[in-house]
Length: 506
Image (cartoon, rainbow, N blue to C red; front, side, top):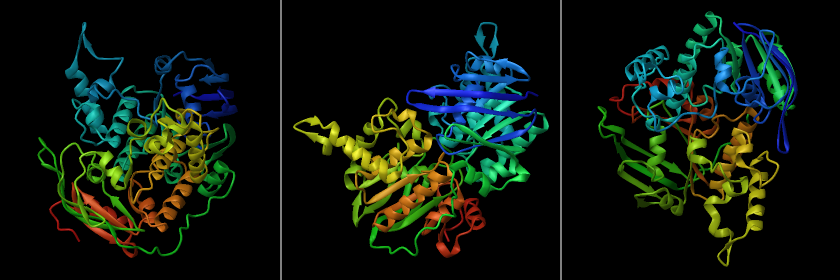
């Protein structure tokens, strides 16, 4: 077991002080949560500890010895590993190859693929999931990729394990499995540093809780001596009241109608990712899509957006007219927008600025005489920054310099600038802190009241219950239930999400 002591740690980036004189300690074998808003410095501090960032001021001591790692391998060598919030996998390699990347098992000079597959399978059995080690990472959804990251960290058998938002892409079932693994690690004396915006997780597991705000250490508290309300207040410097959206919404005519939508699954025993899904969406309404991982939530949105790999079957009507989009550009032109769940891989243009990311879908409006008008772009970007409360030093900032939550706001802003009639939000608040979530909920509610028709998926059932007028529940690609607001409950949603797929929709 290892103890950690941060002493006056400061980390500066161009124009930003990410960590400002941070000092606190982590005891051997404890579960220590690190809380704070996006941009508070949580991930930066963990990158310092794990050797990702090597240039910083101040000292870090492990077991009383000052350390200054020159990379992640040096940190791993002394027993420190990290599960990153932003997935750090090689998509073209297999799951097993990713888990053992850089420390492959060999027979002499040859790779021992069978041994790596066998060890990977043991890790997934420990996590109680059915990921196949020989699959390429590209084939996996974000939630499964997150489980691969967790398996990779577990394979290191570290004394200190850093978990940066490990449940952000997991469903309730996967979260419970992860908690069981965490309890096992704690029994084995592993020191765990845990970053999460989910207060129920923090208060279920923590021994102590450290709060960071604007790069500074605010307080470190024993779990039993504080409350979620106090921690939230210390995180944001103000009280976050329970989210109160407006009263009853006034829905209009159907914007989207789906009849018997099916999506083939070639080569799989189930044959269909989606089977005979039917529902409608009205203007001024928020409809939620619930279901466990693999239920077909993302696939449903991709079908509606013309982004599915296979051609869907069935009928989709937009404003009463049958449509069959072959590409997202056709869906965009017709008035449908989609914010994907995989922010890093599918949402951001990482080499571009905030301005370029926000205006990417509306560039024709920024052109005059064949030339993009940067000033016009900047004005439009500033409007979006103010509307969504994006925390950035300005439109010309690199989008990668923003926190995860503010990157997500940029993607939402990009699609709102297209003035869509139907907005598809796939797990839109993944990795977003409590304050930013409240702001996004208000934005979604306002858009709905302005007449926008919205479909939202989420791994967090309380989020769907807060936001939605109706919730559709999927199980193994079939619609197993449709709930009105008066019938919402986490228990009922989970019952339907775990129902046998053969059951008739209720």
